[in-house]
Image 1 (cartoon, rainbow, N blue to C red):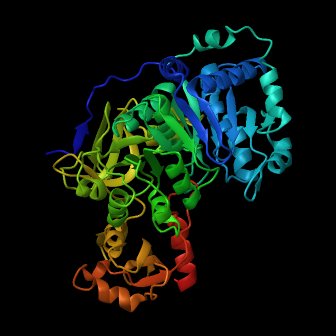
Image 2 (image 1 turned 45 degrees about the vertical axis):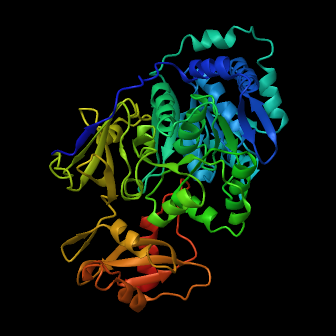
Image 3 (image 1 turned 90 degrees about the vertical axis):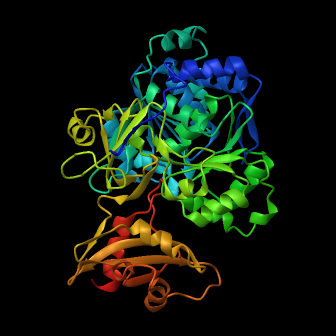
Length: 537
């Protein structure tokens, strides 16, 4: 049987703009709590949030922002981020998500590549002084006309620009918008070259947010804790749009991720859902305060961003009450989710797979060399097609053509297998696969095995250069607190007889943390460079 599958087609796709859909939710659930900023205690019902969104939308129109103009947001998670997201959608401005950890070079690139006209920015966060960076790059940012700093008079001044406008200004602008219009640009952290601006439409992200939460049985009764960043699809699509399409409550635990604060927000706000990448769940489960928090209201959530270790999933279900937790797989270019486990899936499906194809989406697995669809159970490149595939990379037709083929299939660069039951399993990135002495090795398999060692808290496996075999395996290991350190001999002893000899890591490096991209993905490229340097390879 071939490795291809199609998602269910009910319920139907939402053929609305984000603004129209949001207003429909407000009409039905106006008194429901819409947004909670846990750190400050600020709260909005849907009616109050709509009032503030409309005030900002009028301000943007008053400031001369036209449909299709690019408006940026450069800030950690906060209520204003969410307000900008919905206000820009109502006026048809294309929201450009600027990564909060960008520095001057990357910031300037995003401003100029997208042609940003107006930027809403935090003044500072952690080690980032955004105001300083904006001023430092001012001469290079040709299109940037105005910067509005959150929590300052700038914000009030922007709102004031809309005060004199007729009340019809926003509805009239909304009437000119269509579901297929571009509404969002997200820069994907390329491992080589400059980031690419994935351009997404109302239809792309509105539906993906809706179906991701539909599959975890969301209703207007749910309250979702969102510690994942808004500047990425996980936060603003699966989180915010997932909530607002259902009338559910968005809870922002803190500007940046903190395990204890996330646990406290989840408990005190009686959240029913919690999002995170596996490293976040590991940090929460190992936090000294874990046992103090009442998580009994939790029912569900989504883990995405990378593969979930079995032990972490077991603790989500048993210790965090997340019996209906779901695994989702995707990429920014597909809005993001294309595969997801279902709430009644068994432990095997939730840990050994990334789920099955999403509603209204197709997936297939192809031979990376020939492009032919492979048989089920054989590895190949995962491709996806449907409403969720991006419009393209902003102002870069060549890169768009490299990613999306003539038949509309998005080529993910991920190596996957489709099981007989249609569930898929990621076996690695095409570029992460290690070839040792002619043997193809998928680091994921070895990581899963090493996770079963009682003293290992987290592990990542990479290939490093080797004169004899071409490549050898190196394991970066983070030990559990108080555990005796492991070395190459102890790892070999643990693995002998359980893994083929060529899959046993030759090198072991004990580390406190792994290099991460800002979206919580492990930077294996950097790990390879550092390992080669440390071992003199």
